[in-house]
Length: 104
Image (cartoon, rainbow, N blue to C red; front, side):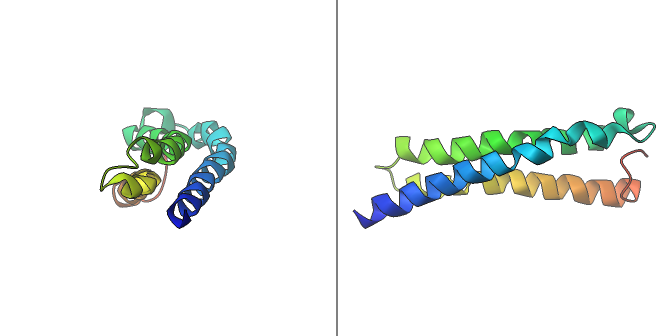
């Protein structure tokens, strides 16, 4: 019973994070305002990873329920963290190769 309450709370947290992340997703076209930024592949990677976050949250909220009888089912709630790591890697690459600019 206690595990079900925790799983419901984690599912709701994933869904809420996915809904909250829709605002930054709506602002993604503004990343291409700088001249030449549409030709930068690192900017496209960053846009793709940010746009994928709501999907990762939805997967992180639903997938554990399909695998709840397995030993790794609870770990699937951490699925959105994978996308956060990809966003961090894309931001690091932009900072390292392009000095933090979207056009380089």
